[in-house]
Every structure is written in C-alpha cells, then in structure tokens.
Amino acid sequence: MAAEATLDRSLLSTEYRTLTYVTGPLIFVENVHKVAYNEMVAVLMPDGSERSGQVLEVAGTTAVIQVFEGTQGIDIDGTRVRFLEEVAKIDVAPELLGRILNGTGKPIDGGAPIIPERRLDITGSPINPYRRAQPADFIETGISAIDGLNTLVRGQKLPIFSGSGLPANELAAQIIRQARVKSGEEFAIVFGAMGITHREAAYFMNQFETTGALERVVFFLNLADDPTVERLLTPKCALTVAEYLAFEKDLQVLVILSDMTNYCEALREVSTAREEVPGRRGYPGYMYTDLSTIYERAGRIKGQKGSVTQLPILTMPDDDITHPIPDLTGYITEGQIVLSRHLHRRGLFPPIDVLPCLSRLMNLGIGDEKTRDDHRAVANQLYAAYAQGRDLRRLVAIVGEEALSDTDRRFLHFADEFEHQIVGQGDVGRSIEETLTIGWELMSELPMGELKRVRDFIDKYHPTAIAQAAEMGDI
Image (cartoon, rainbow, N blue to C red; front, top):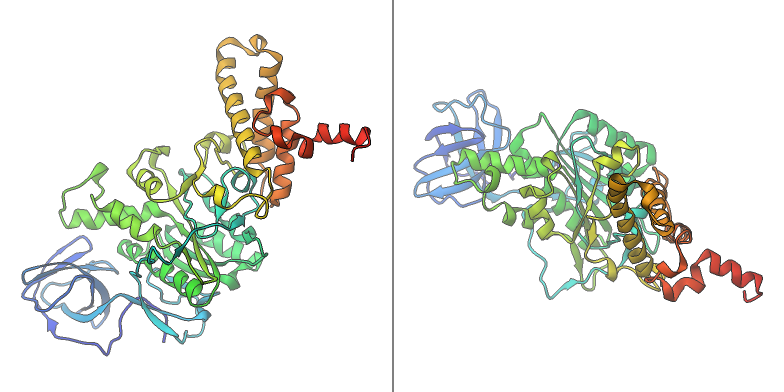
C-alpha cells in the first residue's frame, strides 16, 4: 500500500449528488448530515476518476469542501461526493527514507510500494509542555555566520528569510550536507518543497544524489504546476513523518520547508474563495495561528533521543521583512537567518547579513563542553566590531576616508575582511574551532584596547598574545 495522506477506501458512507456551487478550489454540497470539520472526502467524477478533498466548514446542512487536485472540469450535475468519516492521514514506515513523494505523501519515484508500519493523523498533536525538553545541543552546520554568531540548537525552529533570486536553496543544501550534532550523528532529512520550480527540484535531487544524502532524505515534492491546495497538506505530511522518525525511531531529524511564502499564498487563495474578511495585505486573519501549528511541531521530548529541528525557508516579497509572512514567522520562531541582496551582488556566498540575524536559543547550545569557552564573547565582539565598521561606511560616504582616525580605518577594514572571511566562506564547511580561530585572527587587527568583550580570553586565544608568551617562554 502506497504511503499517502488520503483515506482507507473501506470506510465509505452515503454518496451525495447535491453539489450546488464551485468557486476556486472549493465546492459546496447541500443537504449533508453528520459531516465533521476536517473530514476527508472522495469527489467522484462522471468519467470515473476520483479526487480527494477535505471539509473546511459546515453550516447547517451545507458543507464547504476544498478539492486538493483542483476543481477544473467538475460538473455540478454529474459529480458525486462521498464523505469518508476520517481525517487526513499518512502511512509511515522507516522505508520512507530515500523516497520521493508528492505533496500528499504518495510515492512518485517509481519505486516499490511502501508497506506502512503505522497510519498517523497529519495534523499531529502538540507536545505536552511538561514533557517538552529544552533545546540545548549544538548543531554544527559548517557555516561560520550561523555556527559562530547565530547558533542553531537541536530542537529549534530557525527560519531563513530570503528574497527572490537569492541562494536560499543553495544554503539549505549546504546545511543538509554538513549538519552534525556533537556526537557526529548525521541527521535524517525531511524536505517539504512547496510550489518550487522544476529547476529547483532538479537542483535538490542532484545535490542529494551526488552527495549520497538521498538515502537519509524523505522528499515531499509539490511543484509550481501542481495543485495549489495540495500545498496546504505538504508541511503537515512532512512534519508527521518527521515526528514519527524522531519520537518513534529515535532519529535526529532536520526539517526543511521551502517555500513557506507559497504555502501562505495557497492559504490566501482558499480564504478568498471562501469570501472571508481579509487581514493584512489580503491574507487571512488566522494565518498566525495556522503558521504556529506548523512551526510549533519542532522540539525535543524528555527521555527520548530523537528531535525535530526546523529550518523553514520563506521568500520576503520585495525584500520586505515587515511583510506579514516574515513578520508573523519571526514572532513564532526562535530567531531568523536573513539573506542580503547587497552581499549577493558582491558575489559573497552565503550572503548572510548577520546584523538583523538572531538565534534566541544560542546561549543554550554553546559554552565549555558544547563548543568553546570563548564562543559567546567572540560572537559579541565580532558583532560589535562589524556594526561599528558598517556605521563608518556610511560616514565615509559623507566625509571621505581621509577624515577617519587610524582606529576608525581599522574598523572599516575589519568590516570588509569580516564579510569576505567569516560570511563569504563559499561552499566549504568549517568546524566551530576553525570559525572561532578566524574570528580571533580578524580581531587581532584591531587595537587591543578595543577588544573589551573578549578581555578575559585574550591571553588564551589572541594570536599576538600567544606569540608574545611563546617568545618569553611562558608556553
């Protein structure tokens, strides 16, 4: 039996021929009885084909149903509707690793049918707050701007805020290749692609195959020309599989969801078809609640080895970080990684703008035993020095570099070197030790008196201090 988020066809009930209205992805059925919200539906076409749907609303004896394959070609007079007395579920098994599924969980890679071990409700259930364990384990992504300055922690949800044309997918692929926990254990990857192009899908497939990562990836693929409404199921199916692998099979699971903007557009399309009162920029007022049901499924459970870590990717329309999608995402998640168009135009990869980036759980995942004792201090000093260098760039545009002091010129040069050495590392991975060492080398170009945030670690890690101590025979 193939794994898919549809229904057991043995659970059949009365067929209705009372379809009265079709609008967008929705159909309206009259005179229904004992129909429940979120109940799955089989839409039987006159030509013998079948589509799946889900009850969005029940008002009196009228049911509003969203059809996942779209409503094109549906004939009001000849179409029958069958309510299946079951919510959307997906069949899960360890054999899902290495498989490619469509947005509803049906295999599309031509492989052998998957024998399900369990059948789970895709809406999931929230983790009991009492049983939720605090994220506290460092994840090494191999990317200095993340590991050193915006550390990802196991069980965290840390979105990537991108823009049209920026290499968010390339960054995600690099993280997939390199992500490790302290024990060296590799992640199982659940990749939920929503509305991506054929070119993007081919890129990810090539990355997974050439790096050998495909065998630990469950790939949910909803293309741009696939049904829009199917995108509403894709992240829920992906997270259900992730929770199964993490909490029943004790795996460390990294969930990549790309692109959440396409998901929100699908949400707006359904809301418009239902003629709901729109919220900001036409998005439904309940979008915050809807997004929270996705993002809050990341985490760890006390007494269990597995974890679910989320890296959602979203494209900010017009690079506007105040747009409702990144705005609401930032409220729900524990920080953000922001990509810069300016850095991208300068040829830097990954073009991470570290100043607006944030990892709220960073302090839980760094320190003596997790990374290194100077990690927090180095991050603070690098942030401060880079911010000062960025401010000086604006000053130089007004008064010219000749008006700067020697110390100011050093900070200005530091900002340039920081972007090229820390941020623009290319597609080569680094350990956290290498990242911190490069940070100290950059800071050694600044006056010793300016390094106030790393004062306690200068004798131990500062290259000049170490060299002087070696000359004096102290080490």
